[in-house]
Length: 99
Image 1 (cartoon, rainbow, N blue to C red):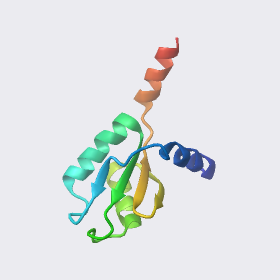
Image 2 (tube, one colour):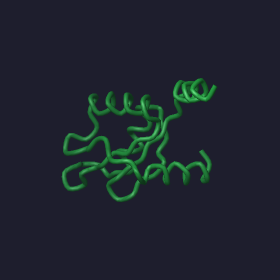
Image 3 (cartoon, rainbow, N blue to C red):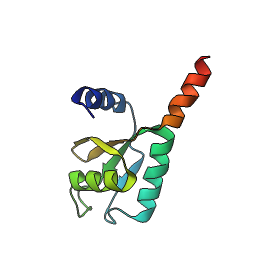
Image 4 (cartoon, rainbow, N blue to C red):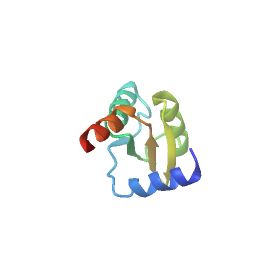
């Protein structure tokens, strides 16, 4: 991912609300599954890390989740992380709607 692509995704993520919170349990199988489903449906998602209770840093959690979900970390700002995974099916739907 280039820096221009990352910047564009970051600007798109400004309007998004965090879908999930990562707390004292850290990364669980349920969180991974929910993140997978959200990335499939939306491509770009935001997650919030409760830094007071979470044992890992937000950057570590973002890297682990990206690895588990085959996505890319767009950015980590404070306790908020942004993940992106391209979904060709979403783009096929947009093309068919335009015709």
